[in-house]
Structure formats: C-alpha cells, structure tokens
Length: 145
Length: 485
Image (cartoon, rainbow over all chains, first blue to last red):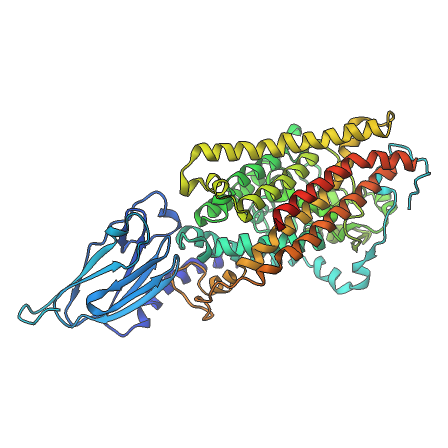
C-alpha cells in the first residue's frame, strides 16, 4: 500500500500535467505556459517551481513561434508578485496575474505577424523588460495584424 | 489535596501530591480500547498523514514557489500548526506522535515490519529488531539537541513558513534523519532526543487533558514481564523506552499504544484529567530552557510576523532583503533573549523568591527547576494566542489550496480562485486576551501547586511565589501589549 502510494502519487500528478491538461482543450490547440518573474524582468516558458526558484535564472522567452490558423491557449502565471498580462494588438488584457495564480488567455492566430505581450503594470524595478512577442508564421501574401 | 500546613518530605515528587480527578476513557468506551489494540491501528492513522506528507514534499519541490498557493506552506504552517497547538496538544497530549509520518520509515527498517510484531531477543527486549541497535550517548539523552534544533529552525522561520522548498528540505532531512538514526540506534532515538517538534510537544503535553497510564501501579511493580518496556508477542517494546510503572508525566510518552497491546494484565488505560493540573514538575535544565525558548519564540514570532515593525520583518526575511547584518542581529538577539536574558530574569526571580521567603532549606536549583512549570501553561497559551490570527486571517487560503495543491492551475473542488477572506479580523484581540489571561491563571495555579509541595507555611509559600508571579504577570502584559497595542 505504501509503495503503491509512493509510486502512484507522482505518477498521477504527471498524468494530470502531461495527459489530462492538454486534453481539456480542442485538438490541435497550441498550449503555451508563460511565467513572469520580477527578478530580471523575465517571461519564461520554463517551469518555475520550488527547486529552481532561487538558484537558477530561467531562460527568457523573447518570442514564441506560432503557425497561422492555430488556436492558442496561453496559461499565464506569476512566480513572485502581482503582474498584469496584456496583448494590446488583440485587445486582450490587462489581466491581473496574482502570485501563484494561473490565468488562461485564448486567441486564434488568424493572420501572420507579430503580437507583443507584456506586463501592463509597474510590478518591479525590472518591469520594463517584461515583454515578448508571438510571431505568427504563415502565408506572406496575407495581410498582417 | 495537600494543604499548606502539611509537612511534606522534599523527596516526594510534587506531581504525586494532590492527584486530581481522572476518568478512565477505555472503561467508558471499550470500543476505543479495541481500536487501539488492533495491530494495524497506528499504521492506519499514519497512512493518511504519510500520503499528505508525501504530497507536501512533492509540492515543496515541484509546486509553485509562492507560499500561499502551495499546500506545504498553507496546510503545514497554518492548518496543521493551529490544530496541533490549539487542539491536539492541550486535548490530546502527544496525539500527533501517534500519527506522525516522520519516523515511519525508520520504524519499518528497524522492525522489519509495518504492522506485525516480531517476538525474539534484541538486547533488553522481547522483540527482534534490525540495525546496529546501539545505545544513544548518555550525554545527549536529554532535550538539549531539540532545544537548539528548534531555536535554529525558528531563526529561519520567515523562510521556513513562506518558502515551500525550505519546508520540503527541512522535512526531507528530518525523515532521512529519523530513518538513519533508527538503523543505528535503539528504538525512537530521533523522536526522543532529536526531533525539534517532539521537544515542544513533550513540554506542552504536560498540560494536556489526557494521559496514558497504568490503571494500578502495584500491578506494574509486581509484573514479572514488564512487557510495556520489553515488548511481547503482542506488542513492540515501548519505542520511547518508557516503563509504565513509573510513568507519571506525559512528556516522553508518544501515545503509540504498544503498551496497551502488550500488557499481559490489561493494566494500561487512557485517562481524562483537568487541564494543566497534573504533571507539574520540570526535571532538568533542558526542560526549563525549553520552556524559556518556547515562550521567547512565541514573543519574537508575534513581533516579526504580526507586529508593525517593518525593519524587524526585513531583518528576519533575509532571503528577500539580503540584509545579512540585520539578520545576524535578529538571530543573535533572539538567541540571547531565549538562552540568556529570559532564563536570567527567571533565575533572578527565583533568587528573590528564595531570599524573600527565607527558604534556606531549599536549594536554588530545586526552586529553579520546580517553579519553572509556571512557564509551561503560559507558553502554550501564548502560542495559541499567537496562532489565532494565523488561522483567522489566513485560513481562507486552505480552501483555495485544497483545490490546487501545487499551484499548477488545478481546480479539483472548483475553489482554486476562492478569494482571501479574513475571518472577523477585528475580533482577534478579543480572543487573544482571554487566552493569555488563562495562561496567566494556569501558570499561577501551577506555581501555587508546586509551591504548596515545597513550603508548608502559607506565608512562606506566598512570599516565594511573589517574584516568579510578577515575572509571569509582566510576561503576560508584554504579550497583551503586543497583541492589542
């Protein structure tokens, strides 16, 4: 019973994260997790969790490549304090992202182009660096955003 | 009851004097006795905690670093801490030790069994144990390690209670230490001498309204088998190395109920008793310093976590502020207060008591040890008063975290976005003050009870009580000032 628990608990958490969560969304949905950290002013796709929070600076996500026509779900998280998420060109946000909370934003990458995302409120001294972009690739003849 | 004009020999332990009312719980509820006599009882109560503990460790390492969204912080330092200090200890003695998952793997390795008993011969017992089975050094057979361990952890409390990874590391180390010590040393060495939680449980369980004792001490004295401490084919030798025939305080009984299972005379029972009136004697400097450390920590926690002094908070919160000089000052100040200043004040009050009561027949050491009991109910109730705002102000985090234990964005019970909602925060001081006054009352009552055993003359008794009582009153007033401003 104890061994079953020792194996079963992490296994079920893994299953939730890697099998159950992606199936919440329609097939072919592009699922992106973006986490904001005030230290360094970084948006990252790396998981920021207990074991790496202090001693590893996450990789900065400056751009995320999307394909035209994809349905995109962005899971926005904050690892430390209150941030605010916005994609101004899509008129998404600003949406408060309190520390430890997960917020979901959905959009369709209908046209090729560049969509800037950023932290909308002055969250920390390095707030100015908290921005990145979604680059939607597709048929170049189509009109951009 | 012992009266003031009785002449009582000084070698009589004070706790055997006025033995208060007690009620045999097993006689009233035989089903409870049947339950604890089941071999699987302890395993069944540990198992859910082991599951939660494992989840906490996973959450600490792989969950969000944000404390109020991580189950290890919210469930351990808000829910568990409050239930432990405000309910389990005062009303259940060391009931937590019955269900504590920390020594589980150590016991498993040492016994080679989770539920069953192995009859046989390991030195001093009637059971077979595995491992090196060495004796713990006599110099360390006290609670000094626990005292320093708790003080050390408390110094980093701002980190411990806010950073999931720190809590996970501490609990991980404790579980490994428990297992390692169980392989090398006899019985529950970890629980008896090392575990920092066990240290304060031992002290405050003295006040508890329950006790596990022999029904008839004479039966124990005549017993040939001493199965409680030696074990039998029905139960393991007491993991705490306690002989029930001499047990007269809750301090070192971990309520594992092995003695209930193994006693051939069915002579062990659980008793109800009044709060803070039975075990009223501290027996060593380690216990006195434990009482001092706990009281001072209740004070410094209240100052740092509940007080309005931002600079002190910054000093304690070294991981965020990185002010190492301030942290050094905070750590040194706290240690100085707990190890030197408060015990010094108490020593001074005892010297004054001895002088004022002209108590030449009693040594300062004896008075110092015995009167220190007053700090036990005071300390426990000061901790409860400190913990009240924790649960009332931050309790709503429990609801959101239950739905999303790792902060991964789960929503198991559709309550992960339950907003932070303090519960009647304005009423907190009105709850804290009566609790502190109850601490003062039980402290003074304990002082009187101990004093009655030492001083037959009422005038001498009250004179001897005055300086320690003033210290206790002063301590209460300091806490009140802190809580109500």
